[in-house]
Image (cartoon, rainbow, N blue to C red; front, side, top):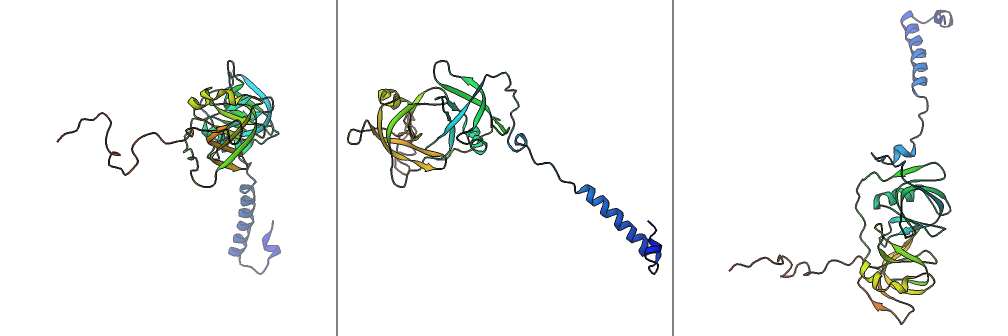
Length: 253
């Protein structure tokens, strides 16, 4: 381009500067080209392990398996399979999967129980999250506020990540948690089709409803008191004279 003919009254130094601006503007336009959005694998931690050899389970998500603290520890599929996972993977799954989605799960299948220990989950939109071994703080179960009542018919027993019986999933997908010892003792009440009434602390929200049962039975007025699953360990009350004593330690005068 002959800038001296288009701008005859400008000094040569200005013309050179103007020409430089045109070149710089073109270079900036090329440098400012749109950047591809971050992929799901880049936005979520990726494991150092190869999960490809693991069995793959597919199914439609019926509901999350929430915790009494409002987190997610797994999914219930419409065929009754419980997809169980680490706390960290559960948080990631809730961000890419919703009820009604058909998902693929890479994980270990239970020997005799309808459970899958998930290590990676892929949504129908192609997003994938993996158990990368990261650690996060699990929220404590709320201990204040009004009691939450769960009553209805049991859909299925609830299992832990290690296959222990720990409660029940109701027909409305509410979740009742018990300690493994209490769940084993009351296993007859946790079978599909049984009516169940439970009261305790927990959470109700978009991810579902879950409680640590304190009172449980086949119907209102027929309940028994149980130790909540998230109850603190037995011992001296903080601040008491015995709180700082170490069991088994010898005392000196």
